[in-house]
Length: 264
Image (tube, rainbow, N blue to C red; front, side, top):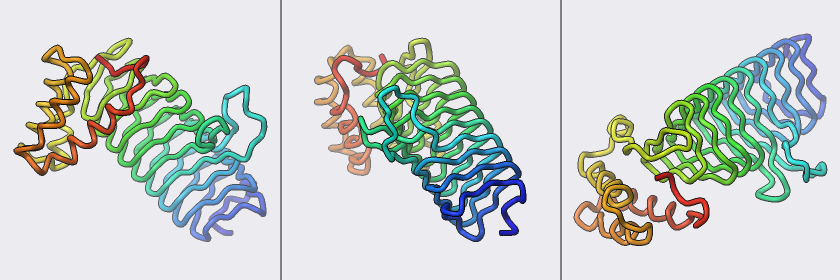
């Protein structure tokens, strides 16, 4: 108990590991579980059916686990699930899920989430992402591993943001962003692929060449999406190590909503 500040209010039913630190004036509700070595700063509110893993650093003034901003919500026991080793900076708002989707909002591991980020109901965020200040996700948005959202990026509901993609500051995402794509604009348009990010993550030159070929098929050769998918399916024939990248791209493109499409 010495790790919980005297002014914090922690419901007796909450489950906190003995190593959890809670700052002044923070409020933690009865259905909250927090794992080992997580630190919670001052003036936070953590409520709802919220599960937080180990080694997270949650800064002051965060609201985690509040009900969704959805008029259809009627008090169902939906969830917020946060993994391990995440950094959550000041004034972030993560809502629980809604019964109209998967009933949970999920944040994976090792994410770096800066100030004023909003995750609406039923968002799913992968691992090793970076959300710059004021990135905002509407409901049901899915974000892949290693994605980077520039400051003030706004994603429309149900948009999918692929792994290793990147948005520039003030981008408006009304369509899906395929893996590896760098986009910018209002609405966002594809500009290139995130080649420098791939190099930093250890992608070989051969794998990056296949990513370049995928970019060409999607954006340079005036192919329909179906024609681009057919070409992309052949790209790993001579570069077996890139098969995982091809499969990821094809899996993503296979889930594109025809009305929403991809950033162009």
